[in-house]
Every structure is written in C-alpha cells, then in structure tokens.
Length: 510
Image (cartoon, rainbow, N blue to C red):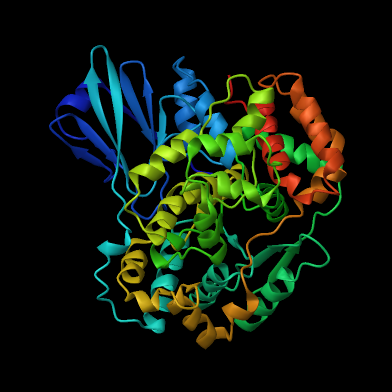
C-alpha cells in the first residue's frame, strides 16, 4: 500500500507563516495558531499527534505512530480510552486509545497552540448533518442518486492502479454500491460475502443480486477452527495500530486474506447513515422510554443485572441506549483491569450536553462515534493489513449534500419506521430489491461458535495479557463455560479477546 506521508509541524509552523507546501486543504490559520479540520463525510482519515515541541498530521495512523516511535515519543495507552473499547467497543472521537493522538471524524477539528515549551491540542466539534440544518430543497430523483453514487465509485477507484472487490453483505447499502459498480462497467470487481452459518441466507441474497447485475460473486466460508486461521489473526493483531471491538472484525480479516487485494482496493457500503436518514429503531425508542434516569439507582441495580441481560439497556444514559452490543460494564472490567475507568460517566455527561437533541439527531451523534471508531475502523484495519486501500463511496461530498438536502419524507418514513426511502426506491426500480422484505443484513459472524471452537486460543490470549490481573482467567473461563446456555455472552467475550490479543501482539503497544 502506498505511504501517504506525515506532515511535521514546528512551533513556528503553528504560530505564524504560511501553511506547509504539502498541506492538504484541512488546515486553517487562526489568531490562536493552526486549526486542523476533519473530513465532513468521514471518508478521509486524519490523525494529529503531539511530539516534542511540535505536532504531526497524517492520513495513516500507522505512519504517524511510526514517526512518533522513531522520535522516541511513542504515545502511551490511555486507561480511559482502553476502558471505552472494553465497555462499548469503540473510543469516542476525537480521542483514540493513545494519549496525545486525536482522530478527526465528522465535524471534528483541533486547534494547535503553542503553550510554554510545548504544543497544546484543543478539540472542537460542529456536526454538519443535524436535522435542522437540512434545507430540504433537493428534488428526489432516483436516477440522480444512482448517478451520484456511480460517479463516487468511479472517481475513488480510478485513482487506484490495482483491482479490488466489494464487501457485499446483501443489505441495501452494499447492494446499492454493487449497482454503482455495474453502472460504471466494472464487472471485474466481484462481490464478496461471508457465510456465517448454514442457516444464514445472506450469501443467497447477495448472489442473486450479483447475478442480476452481471457481477461475479464469491462466498468466503471459514467456519471451523484451524491453526492457519489463528496464525492469521496473530499476524493481523501484530500489525494493527488500534484495537477493534467490532464483532465483524474477524470475518473482514478472513475475507481480505482470501481475496488478497494487495496494491488494490476494497469497497464498503459504510458511511451513508449519518446524512441519508438514520432513524431510531422501535427497540431504540423502547430502551429510551424504559431507561433509569437516576444515576445512583442505576449503579445500584447494575450489581444485580447479569452482563448479557437486555435489562442493561435500561441502566444506560440516553446516548448509550442507542449502542447495540451487550458489552462489558465497569463492574466487570474493574475485576480484572485495576486501571479501568467508569466510562459511563462520560456518556451521561455527553447525554446531558445534548439534552436538546431529539432521538434522530442523537442517533447521528451515535453514528459519528460508532461509524468512525468502530465500523469504519474495523474495515480500515483489515484492509490496511491486506496492503490495500479502503474505499467508501458514500463518503462523498456531492452525494452527501444531495441526500442531506432531500425532503424528510424522501429520507425517512416516521410512520413506518423506515429510513433511506429514496435509496430503497432506487433499488426497487433498478434490480427489484425489496429492502423491507430482505430486512437488515449486516456482515454476520457466528462469534459464539468461533469462541467455542477456539476455546484454548481465546482463553490463552485473555489470561496471557499483561494488562489484566489473575481474575481475567476466571472471567474468561466462566463465560466460555456458559456460552451454550447464554449465547449473548459472546459479545463481551469476543470484545475482550480482540482487545487482549491486540495488547499482546501489536508492535505499537509499549
């Protein structure tokens, strides 16, 4: 994969003078110093790190961390951020798992200022895709939407010399990208679907869509355990600059390994939720109504509610009710990680700050963190490990501005609880895809079976992690024993395994 380079900023660069000659259009000169601004669509990664008496800016986290390490300033792991990954499977942006390293996602910027002998980094956020900011002045047109998506695909992949493939889950987002791939005449790009179990109909639906579009379809099936698969995961964790708590991380790694896109690209249907109409689900609304408002009562009840119980949703803050996984809680992590931080307090404070947001805008806030630091991060980590470029066609300014500017009735149907109305209409017209009948089809993974079939490997990674105390082994063994009876235990157990394996093997961890 081509190196993208690291921009090194001195104190003089920050305080005065013009911008560096190689700077992207993400710098703004201010009275206080220099402001670094993230991509409003979330399509371009941007990291800022403090080192010595200056700062570094890079589009590649690995390159930025390598430069920091070479200069003797390898950043330390933040106990609070590591707790966030364990508790909710991601770190709230612009924070990262490292101290003094920021990730600028949608609406994020950091102000760099000189302070004493060093440099300070002050974050700022201004969400561009809030409901009230839409002019709703764009005419709904399925053909225009189709052309904009095809144009984004063509523009992004034409800049990459090698070939690639599309991660095709059979959900409406990835099927729409498959349609765009066909529209630009790239029938050399196959759709790749992961088969999670014999009962999973996702590959059948994806295969039928590829047949209608004239694209080749590949099914990756890595059910079962093997030493080759375990070695592959260890190699991934060794080279990963960040931990991932995403439950679909492992199938993404296996798909990349199977397709070997080195020097090319991987297309993914992520990135459009935040501006295309992201409605809270009926479950989201129910969790919001039933949640416990009193923090003292919440902390008391948490002691008696099992980790895999859906009642935990009622014990979360307003924002946390929108998080989907049944993951670790502070009462769990504090048993084996002495430095664990009660991150729920962060989300309670954040929820209070956003108390004027309705659930639709609150869902956009959730997507801002979840999309950048979990869903997209998982894809980028797997694709970077495979030596390819991650391409997300929905992360396109022209497409985003058009979709965001649609009348609300063409973005979501409040009466029936459906989102992306115009996209659904486009797919029905183009390929006879009935999104309501197909239902939600994310990339699925039978995590419980993976954990059971790789019990020794999983247990050894968790108990061998130097960041945890001896109680980690008891926690892991107990959950592994109960998996068959309590299948949702695989959520926290898989997150704990992936974080432990990263801490054990990553060359970026000190």
